[in-house]
Image (cartoon, rainbow, N blue to C red):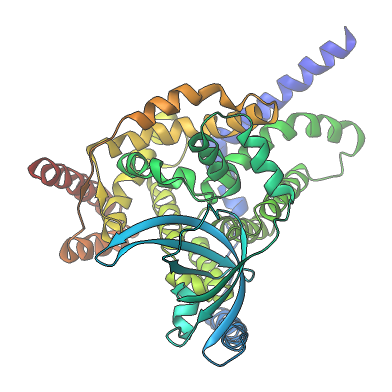
Length: 457
C-alpha cells in the first residue's frame, strides 16, 4: 500500500509539473529564461560570419579532395571504380527500348544513377563494384548527384549486418512485399516501392515516409514521455543535485545517435540530428531555441558543414517547414488544440507554392495530409512497438485496400510570378502579424486556384 501511495504521489507531482510547463502563463513568464542572445554587437556577428566562411571553405576543400579521389580511382583517367549500394531499381521505356535504372549510394554517401539494358535480377540493397565513365562528371555534379554510364558491374557478397536482419524481421510479419517495403521505408529509410508513389503523392504525405526531423521529433517526444516519470522519481530521491532537463536531453540525443548509426548515416536523418545537436547546445546555454534567428544560424552551420545541401530539396523543404512553424508560434504560440489545428493547416498551405515549384503532382485529396499528419504522431511509435512484438501486420488489410484505390493526380506547377509573391510575403510576414494573416489568405487562394485547375483538367 505504501508503494502504491508513493507511486500515486509521484504521478500526481509529475502531472502537476507537466501542467505548469505547458501552462500558457508560465510558458510566457519563463520565456525570458531562454532569451540570452548568442552574439552581442557587430564584431561578434562579424567573427561568426568569418568562422562560417572558413568552415565552408574547409568542407568544400574536403569534398573536392573526395571528388579527385573518385576521378582517379579507376585504371585509367576517364574511368572511376566505386563500391556502392543499390537504393532503387526500376524499368524505363524509350524509343530505343526498355532498360533498367539503378540509383546507388557510394560508401562516402554520394548518390548517382546508372543504366543497363541487360536483364538483371533484383539488386535492391545489394552491394556492387562498378567502373563508371566519369568524363562528363564535374565537381558540382558530384556534389548534387550525377548520372554515369557503367562499363563493368560486379555483384559483391551480401553482408548480413543488423540492417539486413531487421529487413528480414520486418518481412516475416507481412505477406506482401509491398507492405514490408512500406515499413522498411518508414523504419530504415529504404526507398519506397513504386506502387505506393501515386497515392502518397496525391495525399501529399511524402514527408511522413522520408525519415527526417519530423520523425526525430516524434520519437524524441515519446522517449521523453517514457523516461520522464521514472527518472524524475529517481532523481528526487537519490540524486536531486542532477539537472533532469540536461540528463533527459542527453539521453534523447544518445537514442537519436544510435538510430542514426542504425540507418547507416541516412542524409535526411543526419541533417535532423545535426540540427537537434545544435539546438540542444543553444538550449543548454540558455539561448532561446524556438526563434527564427536560431533557425537561420542552424541552417547556415549545416550548409557550411555539408556543401551538398545547397542542392538538396529535402533540406530546403525541411528548413521552410520549420520556418513556418516558428513564424506561426511567433504570433499565436503552440498552446491549445485550436492553435495546433491552425498550425497544421497553416504549414500545409504555406508549403504549397514551394513544393509545387519543384514537384508537380497535385490532388484535392492533399488536404487530408492535415489529419493524417496528426494521426501519424500516434501511428509511428505504435507501429514500431507492434513490430517489436512481432505483430506488425495488424494494419495490413487497411493498407492493401489503400493500394487498390488509385487517387486522381494532376501535374501543376507554381508560376514564377506566384512563387515570387509568395517568397516576398513570407519574408515580410516576419515583421508584422497582419502580413502573416495576408500570407495565410494568399496561400489558401493558391490552393483553391490549384483545385480549379485540377477540375478543369
